[in-house]
Every structure is written in structure tokens, then in C-alpha cells.
Amino acid sequence: MLVRVIGKILCRWLIAGLWLVACFPVTAEEVTHRFNGLTLNANIEMADGKSFDDGMVLILHGFMAHWDMEIIRSAQQALLDNDYSSLAINLSLGVDNRHGYYGCEQPQRHVQDDAIDEIGSWIAWLRERGTKRVILLGHSRGANQFMVYAAEEIDPEVSHMIFLAPGMGDEAEQAYFTRYGVSLDKTRTYVQAQINDGRGDQLLPDIDMLACPRATVTADSFNSYYSSNNRFRRFEHYLPRSPVPTLIISGSIDERQPNTQKLVTPYLDGMRIQLAVIEGAGHFFRDFNIEEAMEAAIEFIDE
Image (cartoon, rainbow, N blue to C red; front, top):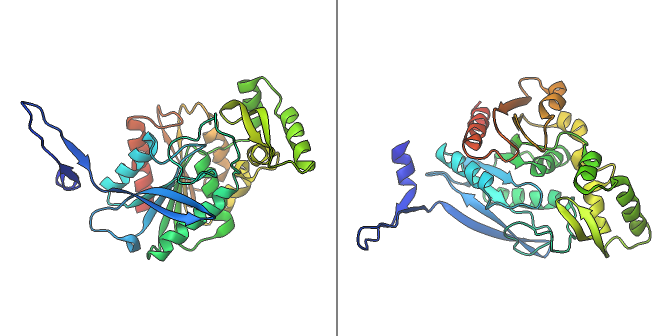
């Protein structure tokens, strides 16, 4: 293991007095492609001696996040250490060549359903390069988006799915009221009226949405996340339709999804749908928790 890790590191020693500038990894590479008039970007980590036709783990971040965050970087490194190549993608959220978090100060125009088309575009990108086996690894809302994508698109390349802290319950109403002190139904009614009047793409001020209080939001964007029939929150409909073996990884103290173990139990069969619980892990699997989570993921893939 030590030899392999050293082989993946380029060390640049610069001597000035008694200090050294140490090592940095050289496996990572940002890649881009054009889709629907936008540049999409991703971070690729190619394992030693592997190529696209050896398979790829496709990784997707959660709400308004990005591939250059701790949980995604750590997941890619763990995969790399176990000889798995990975591609961590950024959803554009309507922004050309987006990097970093999508800020609350920006107009919220993104529509959640666009994620399905962008996921498909990346799988097509891998397919063009000879990839015949794709493992989907999603965190938080990214897991739900992968779940819907796999059930609806049925790509033959997708062999396994791994969901880190997926959204497992329709608790939007209570969460919205707890965060903002406003009834979600009241905001929904106002937003739906704008859509009914043909103003779905017009910006509305002072709308509480996701983690953004008093944001500037289009009605279409709000509706894509909060509509009562939102498909990305219907795990009870999509999880049983999973076309491939699926592992759900839950943190025992997940502050955002505290009821995952209870809610997923009716769907577990020990084979096609499995559950791993990481003791002491929260929603973002910080520090050693992500290493434990990835150990469970890699064991699942190897099986």
C-alpha cells in the first residue's frame, strides 16, 4: 500500500534553509464538455494502469454543492487507493463552467429536473471513451437524483448504486417551517399562482428556498424542489425500482436524515438493496467517517 501511494505522489523538494515544500497528488484532472449550451466540468481520478474501459465510479454532490468539497475529494481518494477510477461531476445549476457552491445571493433559476439530462450527458461522455461499467455514487440530493435517473433511464452501463445519506422521507413541510417559520403550503400556493399566470420564469423577491432565506427565485425553480409530487423525494416509489444492486450508507447521527434506518428497512433484502450504518457519522461523514463509509462501499462493489 505504501509503495502504491508513493507511486501516485509527485514530490517536489525545494530547499531554502531548513524547510521543505512537500508533495502534491498528480492524478487529478479537470475535464469539461459542452451540453445544452453550457460547459459542464468534472474532476477525474484515474487509477494506476487503468483506462476508461476498466470502469468508472460516477460521483454526484448534494444540494447546490460541488466536486471540490471534502466528502467528494475524500471519496475519490479512497477509491483511488483501492484501484478504482472515478469521475466527480458538477451539476451546472444553469451556470456555465460552474465551480464552488451556488450562492444564495445569486438568482435561483436552476431546475432540479435538469440534473437528469446532465447525468445522462456524462454517462454518454464515458460511453464514448469505452466505459462499459459505471457505478453511481451520490451524496444527499445527488443520491436521489441518481436513484431517479437509474430507474427511468435504465442505462446498461450502470452496474451498482451507492447512496450516501440520501433523502429518505417527505419531511419538507416540517423542515421548511422549522427553518423559516412559514408554511410551505402558503409559499407553494403563491408560487403556483405565478406559474398558472405564465410567470414561472420570472424572478420573485424574498422567497425562502432550500438553505437560502429571502432569496430571489423563479417560480419554476421553487416548484422543481418543493412541488407536492416531487419525484426526487419519492424514495418509496423509486427505491424498489432500482435496476441494479444498491447500497444505502447512513450516518448514525445524521442531523438531516435522522430516520433513514427506519424508513429503508422495509426495502432491504440483503442482496439487491442493502444498508450500512456508520456509527458516529453525521450527514457529511467528516474525518474518519468517510473512510469507513468508503470501506463499506468498496466491499459492496467488490462483492
